[in-house]
Length: 275
Ligand code: ADP
Ligand code: MG
Image (cartoon, rainbow, N blue to C red):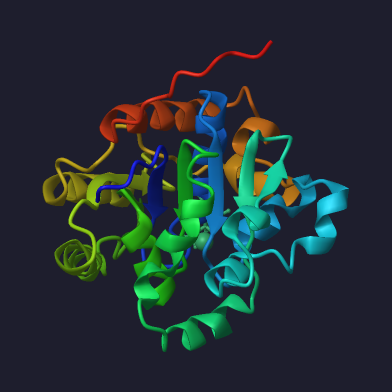
């Protein structure tokens, strides 16, 4: 691509549900915001778990438009994506919300010419405002996920360290490859992150070992353990840094964010510091 974008877009994708995509995207957004990146988190899942997880932290005044100024409105081009950005002041990043109606929109939009590029086009209205744009994908490889892959620079695949963890990975790799061949040759896939790891169990250790064999270049050093505090945080509308900033889970997310800065070659743009 020849455009001069200043943002890096990262799709958190795995067509399996419940593997930790939303939780990881939210916590990485908070971790990267703490490192100084201007982060936008986009909820692409009609189930809107990310949106629901952050709603308690939104400003009272913005709540009345949370079901109107959504990613659906932006994909339908009823709104510019920049009009659908909500600040999450406690966390220091921003959100584009989703809504259950997005599932209907996915069907309708699939009739459109250029349907895989709707998100990429919509992002043009925000690319100067953010350094990192994180795309929280739905648990499927339908049109919304294709839009995420077509718009992304990097793919992060969270994999739950559990029985059948690798099931579906071949299909996901095939889709990424097809997107690279047909839509977006610059799409990179540099990270596989084991989530909900319980290193006391043999199964968890075996899954990480298997991931190491299949994805030696992508597998992150940092493993994300299963932690009660991580599971609790969204019920308070917070990331792990807001909920338990000094606990071990915050340190693990911090390590992962740092590792991904290197692995994905993320650079913090120089900015004049306003004091
Ligand atoms: P996905 O977006 O892939 O469907 P979620 O992020 O919603 O997955 O996570 C599925 C469930 O697992 C949620 O209930 C979430 O709280 C829990 N979970 C995710 N990551 C962790 C973790 N590191 N420790 C404990 N629970 C987790
Ligand atoms: Mg999710």
